[in-house]
Length: 439
Image 1: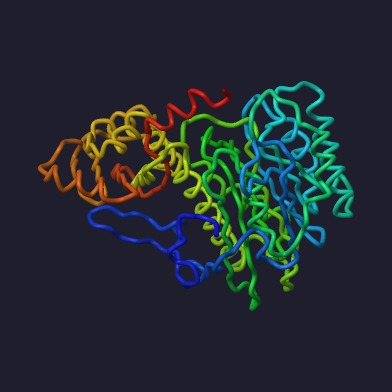
Image 2 (image 1 turned 90 degrees about the vertical axis):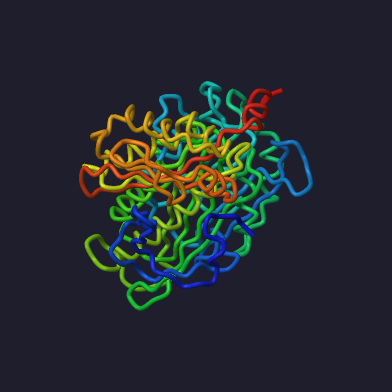
């Protein structure tokens, strides 16, 4: 079963809404006044939605180990409306370049993905190999090559081993139950595959959204190493689907960071094939609001799972900034705190050194007045009006040490905008692992 931030709520129905904790407001996932009822599907995957099949195989791109997969395909049985976002890094994998070109049509049948090789910084051969890989996958599943996208992740500077891919592409067996295998096939340094599925009622019909993602290092997306895929059987108008994905990415993947490094291969794709039936979801309707809430929930759950599984990570850091002058300010401040190496080290050591939070706030560029700032750690207030207030040190240390999640809350008292960002602690294991990644 995939691992994601809300796994304890599988099979339960709940509302996504604003929540109140202590003296500061920790908004729900979406900050919505009231959301659609979303049900998390037990053991769900990217193929939980109708009309999607997937699979994975071992092709020799990674060191062989028990159960290792490194080549996967996700396919819609019918043409699907497509939304996509990609890395904004100036250095891009040819796999991203090709997929971005094909995504401009707004429709696709599927994607072929490999792990173990980023297909990046390899010259013109990279684009030729990406095109050939989509052609091989398309021939295998019986669709046109232009209907397939490609994603690659792994070591930069190494050409795709096309001989191995030609040899093994036919071993990818697609099935409606193959979502977990697909999620495993895109893993690199991940310690577990990350997937989930949710369902909700739209227009009197049950629709499903399934998702899969990978990435535990070089994670600081700005769509935008991170890959995310969502497949839904809802009928969704393409321009709204693209807008909804862009907003969902801004509130999820773009708000998570493991190490502050943006990948050359970041990609997020949503396929909507309409197999659930019903009228097409269009912007400005209650159905559109419900769909976007579900999409954002899936993206945020996957984003949190990536951060929780960050290389060497022991703790998830959730930073919520409330009462900012604007959404841009709230997001900028929250992300600056979650990315700070000093804050990450502070959390690792269970050290409530709030001056590091204040430092990160100050350099973020967000509008603020020092005398208005309040800071909380795990709902315990430690700063008011920009100054320390009496608190029981051992209680805060104990609260940080006893939980795998550390919540940092900030009230700027400048407006009514809020945002949440996610990061992880900085550990000795992260430094050790990345000091010898290629050797």
